Length: 198
Image (cartoon, rainbow, N blue to C red; front, side, top):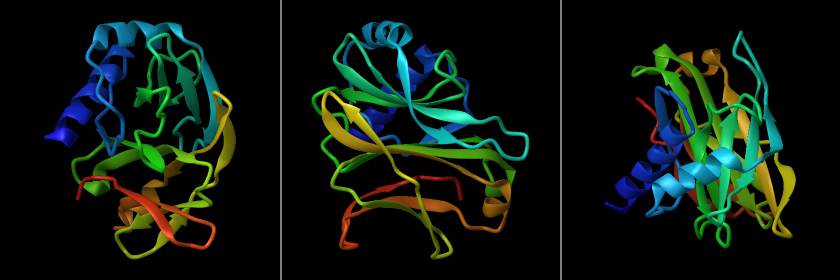
């Protein structure tokens, strides 16, 4: 039930931001009781670009943006630009931007429901400074290492990342199944399942 409530709140924030998406899964964001107030705050606060998502095969480049709102939230968005209202992601309290985890990620895709019909799949995330590496575990046993970008929120160090999966990657039957945060010694600190279509 907790996971379902979290998904509902993220969906409300996304709808308020004017996003039309085929699927948004694996969002690790906290519930907030006043969704109208949060939606207004999201529409007014500036966005700061913290990572890039390359454009490939006709899909436009996107950015990963952090936003601090008047409601005391930190939001993480996947968007074409800082001015765009087409955003995918969500928000946590500013005093706990990672939702009491070592990582907070949002995975979105367009198309489906079959993997072969997915046209664009993107992953964004924010991780604690103690996370040395982030890997995406694929269904074929392989892993993709994310490039991490240093960022600061309220004088606390974090790392952000954004990644677009190529259509060829997905057609080969290697779906992203989980996002894994690793310490410098290679030990797993945290993990989040993607919930991607099968």
